Image 1 (cartoon, rainbow, N blue to C red):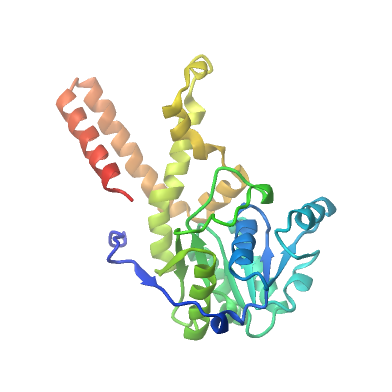
Image 2: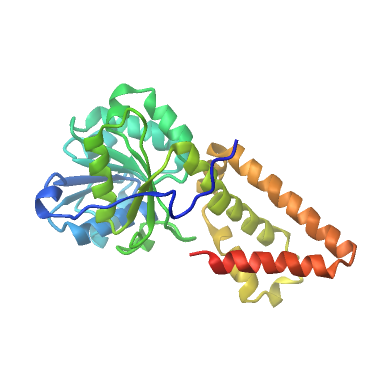
Length: 302
């Protein structure tokens, strides 16, 4: 069953007036997965909370050297336990198929008051898996900052990535109100605007506005003939931009949200067949109407 349409009225926005006292609980923040998103979380917090100690997980020497020289974090750790043992908040910024596992490990070694959150583009399966572990479930509040780039790696992290971007928080019925408030505070300190929805609502909507479009972008890139590529202009580059995303990350996203994405791809296939039929039937009026409707939807989008 499809969830109701997402509108500005249906989003449950949350805001607070940040004060120094309210932010004093964030003395140390750990990022597990210091790539584009994890690095940008650290840099945005450095901007908002310059006194907060930032810890990054880095298992290889080359990455530790880069993080030390770049100033993205203050200190690196080689294990999850070492990285989390004194932290007030932990951000899991790994591929989505590893988030639950890492969040559970972080819960085992972090203080009792610690907030554990994530940046994953899928939510239902992650929340369900973490929910099977009582200690992790008590500390974990899933989140998805809807921001990013086709680029990857900490070298592309910026402190403005989340500014004015929507951050979807997906609490459960057992989520502590106090910890939920901390989650909203945390993500708003990165520059984001937070709202709440259920994990299932999130995954259904993201399949439509992110996951399926990524696969369509990849499809356009995949089927182009080598003979046509030299003539590729801005239109082809625009529609295939996100196809340059990391295949490891996107394969994991598609695996975690396969049912919702499959439903969206079925609709894409049906619309493509309609278009093919219009062209075959030389139904130019129907084609014009179809393009006009699409143009109107695009013009009304944010």
